[in-house]
Length: 256
Image (cartoon, rainbow, N blue to C red):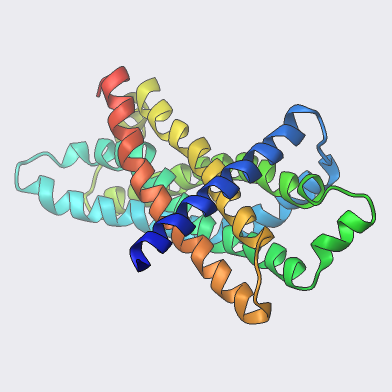
């Protein structure tokens, strides 16, 4: 019986989430977008996540180069460290790591902000004033996610490649010009496309989940923490699972 109730509640929540997403999408399609709020959210979300994204990316590139140096030295192929770092970051690591960091920082902030408004009846108050809360609060945050996350991924890729460059040049003694040339030559359209398709899907997923959980938060201050934690956990699971599916689909249609 408990399992049946859990499935029933899960399906009901999924249906309500789908209707919530359609309502937000309808506002965008009808041109009901408050651009001032969008730009403010772009600034807030970008600043909130930029430093930690850069730190994670630099460390990822450096570790890839360090591990690549050890592994490839066994086969006399240290000159391929540049390809290893660049392709790993562009195809997989930068989109996934940046999305995870973004959901843990900005996504949690979105859920907490909307959750606090919900438990304090501020969302209901906007309706009383004749303002659509989805248009006023949700749409700017979701659109900002679509803008900020791709920018952060590009920054992540550049910083990660820089981290790999520093390690490769100073630890593996690879000539700087050679490393840069190999990096540029190895990244093709499919590699960049493979990573960037995922980025936009992740951005929609994070914006949708965090706004939905925050918008329907209940249970007072404890409920804010509980719903925010649930939103971040759902984002993590969604990113990891969808990344696997998207990678398979992209490689099936566009090759490897």
